[in-house]
Every structure is written in structure tokens, then in C-alpha cells.
Amino acid sequence: MPFRPGLTIYHALAETRVVRFNVYGQITSVSGIPIGGNISYRLLLNGRIIPATLLSFPVQRNNSVALELIYSHFTREDEQESFE
Image 1 (spheres, rainbow, N blue to C red):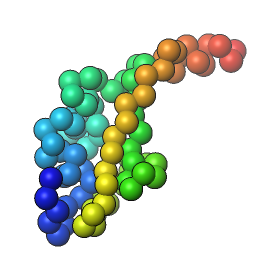
Image 2 (cartoon, rainbow, N blue to C red):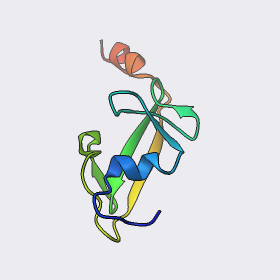
Image 3 (cartoon, rainbow, N blue to C red):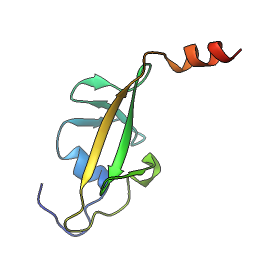
């Protein structure tokens, strides 16, 4: 995707048409794989993990934005039950 001034991480991901967002700007799926349950994601900017709250952060020329899907054998509810 070509750089342009004002491009944000959100817009860069949305323009791939691979990442889908809900009306609140939260990532809901990647390549048709829904986020939730056993599937979560990690957002990276130039190889460094950043919080999803920075989706509105502007991208600079030559920045690298990546999204990693993470599969967990346990759902979050299962993890909670194992600690009780």
C-alpha cells in the first residue's frame, strides 16, 4: 500500500480489505477469521508490539504494520476456571 500523509494504522489495515472492523473501530476479523474466543491478535508497528488503542496513530513513510493472529488452546473463560 502506498504511503500518503495522514494515513493511520487503522486506514492502512482497512485498505487491505483483509481486516474488518466493527462500528467502534475494533478489529473483528482477519481474512475471515473472527477475533474472539480462542483467537486473539497482536498489532505490531516496525516489529514492536503496540496496543490496539493506537490504531489512530499516523503511519510514517517506510513504517511496517503487521497483525499476528494468536490461537490459544484455552479460551479466556477456561483459563479463569483453571486458576480457581
